[in-house]
Length: 378
Ligand SMILES: Nc1nc2c(ncn2[C@@H]2O[C@H](COP(=O)(O)OP(=O)(O)OP(=O)(O)O)[C@@H](O)[C@H]2O)c(=O)[nH]1
Ligand SMILES: [Mg+2]
Image 1 (cartoon, rainbow, N blue to C red):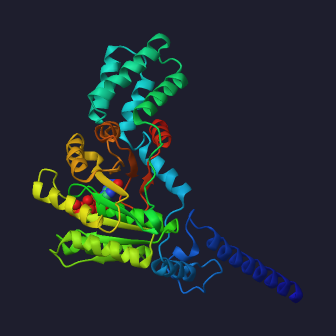
Image 2: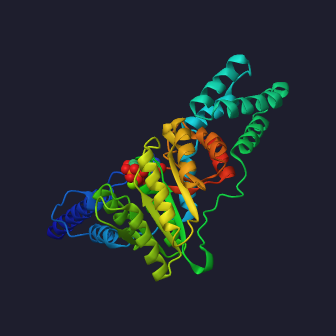
């Protein structure tokens, strides 16, 4: 009998131990989805194997000291494409509205016309596009969505033009550096574009020097220096209020002495209507050319400024012989159509587009990729 009592007691104790272990293990596993044990409030428990506290801190520290590397081209292009697609770009939405219209009546065509004009495609290109679409689609209608889209694609491509000449002229003659002069009105994104471009060129193993020929504000040179430091590129600067042409000259002299591939010259933003400042820009170019030819003059235009961008383009082109256009702030802009008239106005191609404020938000402009991104329904 006494033995029987001890058996029962041992059995009860065993059951209690098993129950306690089950509850403890169960509690550890039953975390809400996505929450790791380390995210729970500290309870004095010993760290479990999955405790990620140390590695996370280490990774954060590493990110802070690691020198920056430009984003790989593939993921950059995919991300930039998303910024142009209809879900985030009003210009694309306007274009796609024609494909989803139930009938192609007068009202539909008028709506499309209005949205293209709003997108700054310009009156001439807008009527060309609408006439071509009407001619192609009025017989079959847009019942065949794939065909309607193909027509829209080819007409847009025709307006935007081929990609023959969109590369940057980086190569100077006789082993001398190529020189890129960057110009435009205030705040269009010149300095930011140079910073982004420097990253691209460094990633392509080009050696370069940047020239802070915006001497109006000390902050302008600082801004360029910050970009240069991020990718280990030297920035030549002068005293605040000094002669911008002499900074450009010094930078080019340094570029020649160091045997770099490219010198990129940042200039102060200036209104195209200020004759004195426009003359100064002409002087900067002439002074550089005492040393080496300027191989590329990039005019930076803010896509959101619309038709005023055309007036700017005209005047800058007269003064410095623009060879390529950078269209910035295309991200989320309803004004992407400006690409067409600005190219027509100057007779020079858009070579780069800015699609955000991030360090890698700059892309070479490619007509097919641009049109496809606009027509991509996501
Ligand atoms: N969303 C967007 N913002 C941009 C883009 N490019 C430049 N910016 C922003 O535009 C603002 C002006 O850029 P800056 O590079 O300083 O312009 P800037 O032409 O050098 O200006 P000034 O030297 O004063 O004439 C900054 O806030 C940039 O981050 C772009 O492609 N997209
Ligand atoms: Mg600037």
